[in-house]
Image (cartoon, rainbow, N blue to C red; front, side):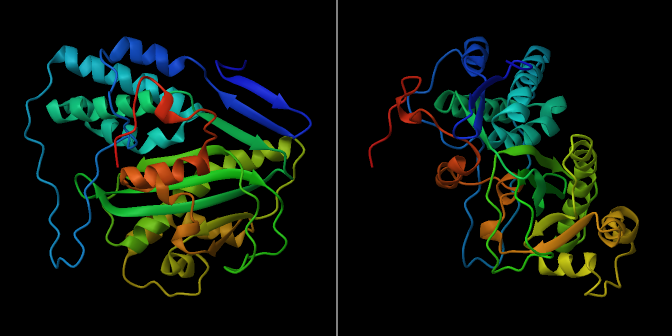
Length: 321
C-alpha cells in the first residue's frame, strides 16, 4: 500500500500493478442510488461528426435548470472523489472531469446528467489497473491538442508521460521503431485559458504545457540516479514542429512568442527534442477530445490493464447486437 494505492509486484516478470480495489464501489454506494442496467463505455457525451457538411454549428448553450446549493455541493464532491482516482490510476476519466470542473460553479441539470453518465462509466469499469514495466528509465512524452473543443472558444492540451528505453538516435524519424510503451507516470489533460487563433497555436501551447510539466520529472529522475538526455516529445502537427525547431518561419502571431516560446529555449538547450509521428500513434490524442463509446472501448486497453471483463461487473449486461 502507498497513499491508498495497492502495489502488486512481479519480480520475475519485472512488472508492478497499481490499483485501488473498492474505491469506486465505495464512491458509487455514496453517490449513485441505482446501478446502470446497460454498460456505459463512454465517460462523457460526444457529438458525432457530420461528414460532408460545409457548416458544422457549435452545440447550443446550456439553458437547463440551474442546480440548487445541495446539487452543486454533490457535484463538487463527486468531482473531487473521482479526480484523485483519475490522477492515481484511471486516466480515462480526466477529459470528462476537466469539462465538468469547468462547469461546476454554475452547474445545471445537464451537468448533473453528465456526472451521472460518468458514474455509470465507473460502474461499468470499477477496478482499473495500471501496469509499469521495468525499463531504462528514460522519459518520453506524447503531446497533442484539440482546437476550439471546449466552451467559450477554448482548446484542450493533452500529454502522455512514460518511462521507457533510451532513444537510439535523436531526433527519432517517423519510420523508426518507437520505444516500448509503459504505464503513464503522468497524464496532462487541461483546458487552456488562452483563446488561441489556430490549431498550430494550440499544438504549440500543448508542447509548452507538457515541457513545463516534464521539468520536475527530469530533475527527479536525475536525483534518483537516472541521467536524462534530451527528452523526446512526439507531436502530430508538422507546422508546430517546424516552429519549435526553427525550420518554419512564423511571422504573424506575436502572442505565440510571449506565451509558448520557452519550449524553443529548452529545445535549444538540448533538454527536449520534438519529433513528428502521425496522430494514430499519438497516445495524448485520447486526452484532448470527447470520443465515441467505440473509441473508448478500443483505446482503454492501451492505457490500463483490464483484469476483469467489464460486462460481468455491477450487474451490467452487454446489449444485443
